[in-house]
Length: 121
Picture 1: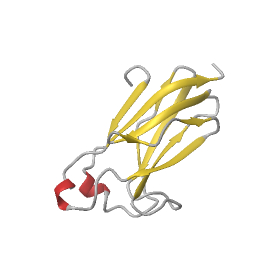
Picture 2: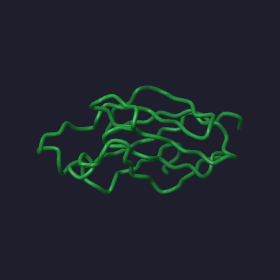
Picture 3: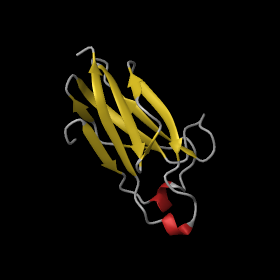
């Protein structure tokens, strides 16, 4: 974590990730920020069970004692606006970072979590 910004580059290439079935995820190492410890991201390259086609899913799971958090996720630089997580889990669907063409197979996926505010601090 660099200040209020977490950058997570997935270790697998898009070519490997894109082959995973829907509702399969890769998880980040555990991390925390001020008053919001024990958090973890998950990336579903082909979306969660309920996502639309051509969307991936990013989730945030928080520890039970964590303060609420306002944040924005970016998947390879593309986001869908600020979100708030007051409960244990947030799930959001995002446009896939790449299409299925072979030219993107060796590229990486970068998930950025920009912390905007800690709620109940």
